[in-house]
Length: 355
Ligand SMILES: *Cc1c(COP(=O)(O)O)cnc(C)c1O
Image (cartoon, rainbow, N blue to C red):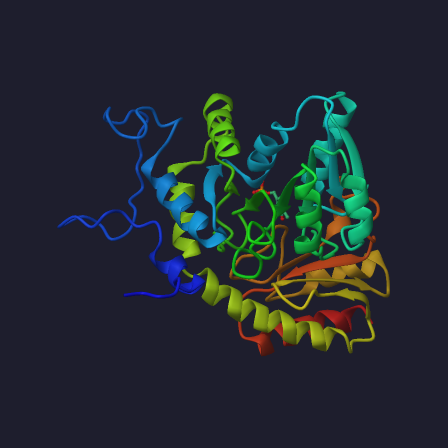
């Protein structure tokens, strides 16, 4: 008899498999269907698809809640923000993913919500700003500033006062941070990043233990139609099976690279929270040099997005919609699972080009 819960590494491999039937597949197949045979969970594939269900079972088991997959991280974010009552106040992490803050600003412009932006590293200020708010939206670590919130202290205080707490857990993944256990009510993911892990999927998810909110989100997904694709959920589940192995290696690389970058004279404002696979730093010689550096590398790919097996980087402000409080010369490096010496050779050569 098993006396302890399975370790997350085992859950990542074992959860969300179809019931064993002789001759049937071990892995969840890609169910391409609009209509399904009546009598099951769903008859029409906008309301449910067995491939989504298996991905959701695995992610839910890792986060410790019930997961719902959405067409993208932003579709998941939108579904959750739609639960805020009209005129309600949302408190959000300043320096969050620009897609989230720009959607919140749009909702403010349309008179749907009030918004207060907070520094997530200032626990007292976050708690104070959340009094009488409908929703506290934390992102930790933030993208791209890598600010880290004390989720346990914040969530226990804020949630007890009746404010729902959501955490965008894209950077930490359930293997480094389990917001529901820390007292949050919702976890949001861009599964496009570390969970799927191969830069070939756009997908999102919300995870919660609140049954009423789960039903409301599921019903909105059906009625608004921001549903995931069967192929995307299949690929994300396949990616999730190796999340722990990829994360361990990429994190080991990121730790090593960040300690070498700390000694590089061309680098200022180095940020690495001590865990995870993302590093941010500024290039002392300025934005033109930062841009050049990201374009001359040969192994580290000049590309947006993050969390893939391949290392990628970019100067964030090259996107005109990136918030202006992100420094012009800030480079966000997503560390992959290559050999760290090859990554450093490439990085060091790119640093040499700028000084
Ligand atoms: C990419 C990202 C999102 C948006 O997810 P999509 O899957 O691109 O829609 C949300 N939050 C964070 C932290 C992200 O990095």
